[in-house]
Amino acid sequence: MHKRYLIIAALLGAVSVALGAFAAHGLKNVATEQVITVFETGVKYQLYHVFALLATGILYNYFTNKNVKNAGLFFIAGIVLFSGSLYLYTLKEVMNIPSLSWVVFITPLGGVTFIIGWILLALGIKK
Image (tube, rainbow, N blue to C red):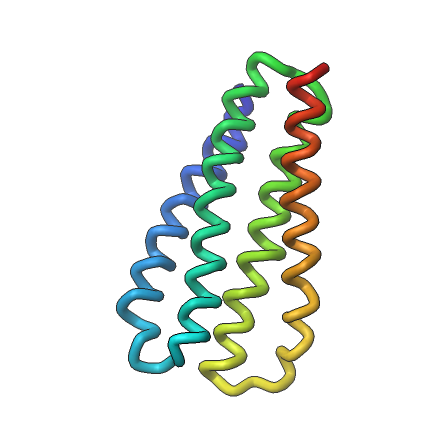
């Protein structure tokens, strides 16, 4: 078991629920439906990968190798890059901050990071 991954997953899960509630209640008066949808996509992918991180933390007990350990790191990085960039995009739109325009280029990097995490997890289990 990788206890740190389990703790991080639990904390990120709590953040996911809080952000989801914020999207449902706090954003509806200040953001367009499109912007809310983008934010909710970030929350969804964060929560999906919280479960991936939980599984990785548990699977590390049975498949103790670098691929499984690195999969967890890539899931965490993916949450920060993918979901984080969507949260920043929402902030940019709601607060009208043109200097955050670069954030749209980070989202695909986060998606690739998630994919790498899944591939590493598969390779680590296969070993």
